[in-house]
Image 1 (cartoon, one colour):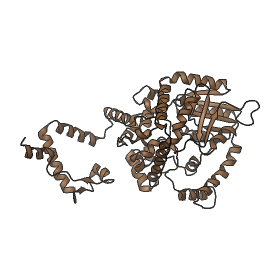
Image 2 (tube, helix red, strand yellow; image 1 turned 90 degrees about the horizontal axis):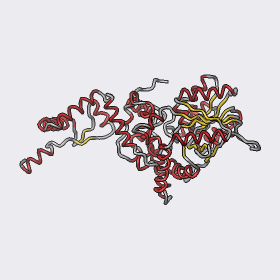
Image 3 (cartoon, helix red, strand yellow; image 1 turned 90 degrees about the vertical axis):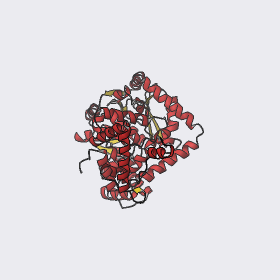
Image 4 (cartoon, helix red, strand yellow; image 1 turned 30 degrees about the vertical axis):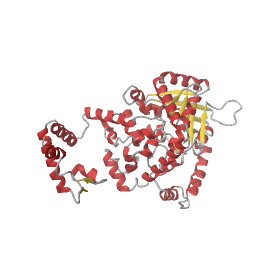
Length: 467
């Protein structure tokens, strides 16, 4: 594979040139329309959004207490709890569990947090086979790709891409029929479920007062992953806690509606420990790995509210930037508006200072978010930090400095406006600038700019009013 471009703009150019972003805009618009329709059909949607937000913020404010309660209840149910400070420690814990139990093969349910810590790679390095069981993640794995959306990993692929992939990798007859493609994947994955030694899942919510893990899926793979193998490991970001079943129910009321336009996902799985005496199925051992990986630092900072995210993907679907650039341009597990905050918050601004600028600050994400997270506010805070840390590009630092100087000196400002009008007139055609030089090309590559007025406002005012 070609090396990953190190800048956001570099990744955008790569993906637009390859055509990988072409299917994204229409698919995102369609998913957003499902959210709107489902919300309009639910008279209590706004009240439930307020309730879900209240639950998430209350839990974050009391996270230490609820985490301790959850861990205690998991152990009371016969499970094992492990605490991981970062991805390396989490991978080491899971690898040790697998090796101690002579695990040769693992089947996984969809999990963004295991993608975050690169768990698959860690297990494969010690010779353990890993198969993704979510259809989208299975396609991503087969194509050696990365997910481009939080809940729809292959939003960037067409059925023609998938048909060619299955024909090549699974030796299946070429087809573009979605039902036939699903059946091909189902028949392949069914064998994996029956032979896997360990099932690994993520966690939509952990219920503190019962030690229950809530898994939400539309394919049933989560249920098979957590019951068929003899060992089940749940990997959970430490913020995924809710206090009670009633609170979990309130969050579920808005989760599927915001994400997929459903009243409730097809499968809502409640896992409370290993198989008990007399149970017909379930794992012999149940482990929960609770991951920090920058979350406690984020919780104590100005981006703490981002940890209230319930991972529905609504902000991605509505975002005009995500629709244009796709998910891979964000360079890490979490794309879109949520990723523009989460990634710098968890991993720092040194490498990720561009992401807070991947936004128009239009506020559509706040309107779509089922828990009303103020993403634009946090993006502005991160931009301010990036400037304070010296991450602004040199040309932009110079340009902003020149403008600041001119804006505080009227004579300089008038000269700047006059020069801008002259240059703009030279570049314009029929009143529009369609191709600007240098960094301006990033703007005119996607939109035309109006020609600057030949006579600026202050001059017209003076002509009319004499002062």
